[in-house]
Length: 599
Image (cartoon, rainbow, N blue to C red; front, side, top):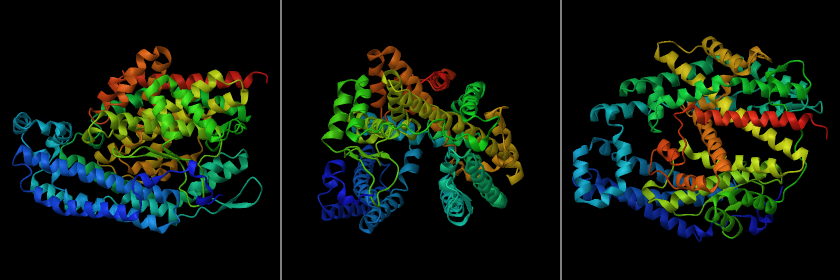
């Protein structure tokens, strides 16, 4: 693998536009420290007048913008060479600044919650500049019914200091302490099985390898089921108790409240997916046929339907593929992205020694977007570029159209724009490609995306609500109870034609997202919204695209649901989920058709 210095400059970020050198970076660090140290002066006077409140919130905005740029510089440099301890140290310094900032501003949220609504209305009239923060204040005020007295909040905060470590304990135990042993790989040689290598082994074309990995992994997890159940039980009790003490109807309501949605969204997703599981069963049927198996087992579901697409795409070709795909969004979207990639060097392209793996899009209100790739010339890499470009352009329109106070969109909608690009790219390749191999590869990728993001995450979401409900009813989450409930779900989601090997009952032990408090459902709602948007773009054209650009421009100025409604997407209705399932079904049918046709 090439060293960082061997990568040509045109394929690397130029982070000197953030800070010319470390001295400039440290000057801003010093400035941030000074502002953080002085912030405490706002505490006693912040809510005395509109002017005081505005001044405090302006300082919050200024500090957060400064810290965000500092973090970008340190983190982006570190991610391109994790062996460089200098940038690891700089990143650590910025994280320390964030911690200091959190401690210094602890009173801001509670103070905003306590403000009287009538007083606020009077202040907005007297001091219109404060209206810039009305949305931010309204978001905090929503928590008023669930906020305790000052004394109780202080006590609660102190109690929380000793909690919340369950996820860290699980991560350390699963990743550092568990040993799964070795199995024989495709070449017959013994290879180490780890949680990280498990899924790649399940994707082996050799069924013996898949079965050995599956059996060995759960053989080990099974020895520690009581430990994993105790951790999950303690974590869930904490979440349930927190919700009960604050007066929420359930821990689910407490969690989705932060997204400004109700549990109805969650339940609509689960109900709609369950009504349409037959489409997923069709997918497993064709997988069994293609693999030539009498019975599909759970260790077969990741097995590749086809080999990797042999066509290679240079990065320059990938850029043109993506730019061709986004022409549908109009001149501003297309030209901004083209300039960003070709002139402003938004993308750090190739893998190199010490570079962080994977891909992401980053950036702040005061910086351009930054995309990290580890590009290896594959069709999947082109799709990844389209995906990350979607994130970057969402940020571009959001930042361009909003003040800093309302420029950040929430996690609830964060994957919509990126997935729209990914789906549009796949659909375009299916329309335009003359290659049977390429079409099958695109369809396989589409099917895997829907299976993993829509169906699997919904199954996880259903299980997550189940074990929270069990704890709320007074039950203790034992290994036996969790295994039983999880196995029932697996059998329902995989259907009668898939052999549900008994070991899968323990799969919940290896899912870290169960410690992220009703997070996984957002993956499924995002791909559903994206699929519905793509359908309307492809059927309505320019008349709809303007609505989509308006959605991208909402940022945090509206609630996530209201932002999606700007694009004509209503996640309270089953139709949005049904559109995504229909697209999955169409991909399954098209794959079957092309695969069975003579070459």
